[in-house]
Every structure is written in structure tokens, then in C-alpha cells.
Image (cartoon, rainbow, N blue to C red; front, top):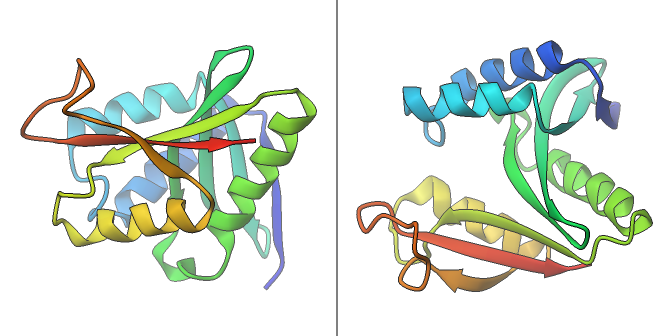
Length: 157
């Protein structure tokens, strides 16, 4: 398996990849309105694509918040390639680039650890293995919904 990670410079291409992946990942991305918002953002935000044997198999969108911080806004890997290091490779490539730019913090928002939904338990474990730590929970966040408790994970770069 040949894996390459690179910036996706074509906004329409980023959107197509994201839409394909959301369709393959209904356990994580089954809400139509949210998926439309993600697709719109794929055309705006910085996108990194994982190509597996030349075909897009993973996508990571980065949202920059300040001169020192960035967010993993969206990350998806084709389920046929889960647990094969594709997500790790995407995060690693983005971290290397952000460090070059003197970005000091990378964070991600996901469902709170008390939420029992199994796919997001695996998501949290992935980020924790990548060095992210729980920094803020929805009880402390103003914009969080009690029906969808959120948690913010932070990784110093």
C-alpha cells in the first residue's frame, strides 16, 4: 500500500472527497445539514488529502483561529483503511507544517467522553493516542448543546 499526504489545492476536489467520505462513514456523518456545512467548508478551509495507491482515501480540514492556533475541523478516512495509519499520517503531516509556521496549539472538538456512542469513543481514543488531551468540556463551553455534549482536545505543538 502506497500512501502519500499532500495539500489539496482544488476546492471542488476537496468537496468531492469529503462528500464521498461522509457517504462511507454514516456512523460519524449521518446528519444532512451538518454534512452540507462540512462540504461548504471543504471548499474554503485548508485541506490535506491522503492518497492510497493514487486514490483519495482520507481528508483533513484545518481551520486557523489565530497566529498560534489551528483546529482539526474535519477528519475522515475511508473505512476500508481504518487502523492502517492513514489518520495518523494526516495528523503528522499537518503538525509538521504547522510547526514550520510556528503554530503552537492544535485542537479538535468531538463528542464528550461521557457520551456512550461507540464510534466517537474510538475517535477520542485516536486523538488521545495522537497526544491530544481533554482541555474543555461542554459544561464549560457557552455554545454547546446539552443534547450533544462536546469536548475540546488540545495538543501543544
